[in-house]
Length: 134
Ligand code: IDP
Ligand code: MG
Image (cartoon, rainbow, N blue to C red; front, side, top):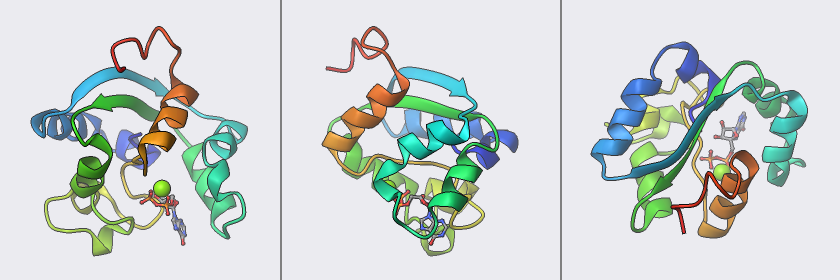
């Protein structure tokens, strides 16, 4: 996902271009404005964390762009490409360092395992839209 601030700041094109340059295929892509309940469902894994309300309010504050990306070792390589959760700690040249502004507004989301990627792709996309992924 490209998060609301990065979309509002018109960074989506640059972020997607970088992802393509790094060798990912974009299998599916859409822009949607999540409601609070959608954001709570997507981030339900974090429901007991102190930042859950802040996170889900933010993620429902404006449109996001969701994508299914395909590449060998996609999850691990994408985590390296985006950098640490806090942009201040992210390595130079990473997407969060380049386009993130703080811990919440850190430009992009990334799945943390193949298993969660499957769940998260299914949250946004139908079977038809995921067709080429498997
Ligand atoms: P990740 O996005 O790097 O996987 P997670 O720990 O899964 O990081 O947290 C999900 C998102 O919640 C982060 O991307 C970040 O925007 C937000 N977040 C994490 N920790 C905090 C916090 O302590 N305060 C506010 N937001 C946080
Ligand atoms: Mg995470």
